[in-house]
Image 1 (tube, rainbow over the protein chains, first blue to last red):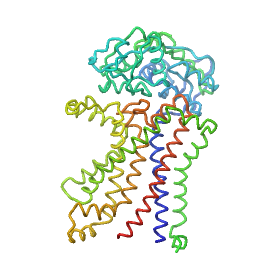
Image 2: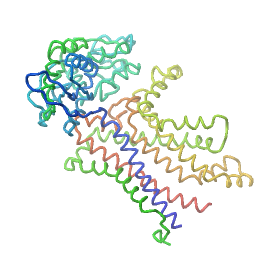
Image 3: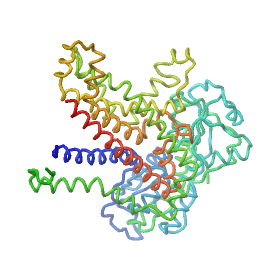
Image 4: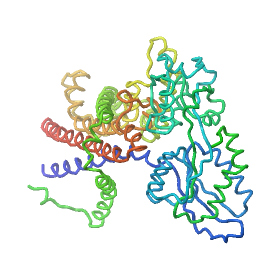
Length: 275
Length: 271
């Protein structure tokens, strides 16, 4: 019987460990979605020559396609430079940066999140606003529920998915709700724009509130319905050099490119507004 | 005889590696406990949204575990006690949710039970709408947790063999009586540990729920989804809630092991 006692004890312990691992593992899988690569040994450029080397750019998830295109152009225009991007939710990126992740440039989807990084003394200089974004209604292709205005979303028979107030797109949604006096009886409050778009493009929801650029980026999988009240909540995107950046000249050159004519043209094509 | 007087035939290097393995699992838990803001702990975990999330998680995980038992026991019996062409393939397919990323499971469920899914016609006919409901959460949890129960029960069924069942049958017991009086009592410990694993998996379920059920306080936002959302604005709350999730899992596993060891004694008595 004593072997059984010992075995039982070991089994109990094993079950505890497995259960704890299952539970924590599932929660942990969401904690870090971005990939980070170290900047390597960036050669320091002298002030007179064009900056070369490598920088790491942390940018909001909503900038992914735009910044990828912009980065390719920047590298073509500046031979000898390499940009490495890490795209994730702005809050995630701040968590990574305060945790010591190496980066040279940070582009946030809203000023509040950039503020968090400034508070943490991780911003070098003053952040520059480089783009704006407003909300738009996304519907499944062809708009089957015939959503025409923001007021329509107050109708409970239209299944609307929005972002939770805790995330920037949800905060913008709440601002428009307050300004218009329309309360949306949302069937779900998602943690990210991607989750809202997923529910809409799959036809699960009749409508979702996302950014103009998200609707444009989703192509034919969703149909956009712009609404004038969106001007009540304009999201401003700031960009800044991270303190401790390994290659400050190149970081500054990239920021100049984003705020310059070429960068602004690409951003405008993607649907971003002028700051 | 005490367990300590037994022959402990484990080489020292095995023990050393086992300790490293245990540390690998335990250290992250310790790291999290260290990070908890204890001064704010109680207010953080007793906010309305936290309590809603915890109660919803307990409710849905319990129902999901019950569903796993109801359909999982017959599945394990069929896989362990019968043989038919294609059984191996069927077993692999049944166990698929184990290796599938939960998000993929969620997408698959969406394409099955969603508004535009495979079962659109019959569900429209019956007037059933699952999307964005607590039912969707339970379905997602059952989907990912079911293999844990089937796997552990099927293994136990194969291990105990069919000797007692055959004797029972020769003494005139019908198949249902054999199942009820012999088979199930024999594998009860495995059934309980399988159910506990299923519960733990359902409790931690995140990806499939987020993809398939959405996230609304009190309806579909379970504890893992609440943690994910809180992390955006309040990392302290996220850590505190994670600790609650772990505590719940440890309590449930501990209780179930207590029940399990009692029933194991019972199992030994009848055998």
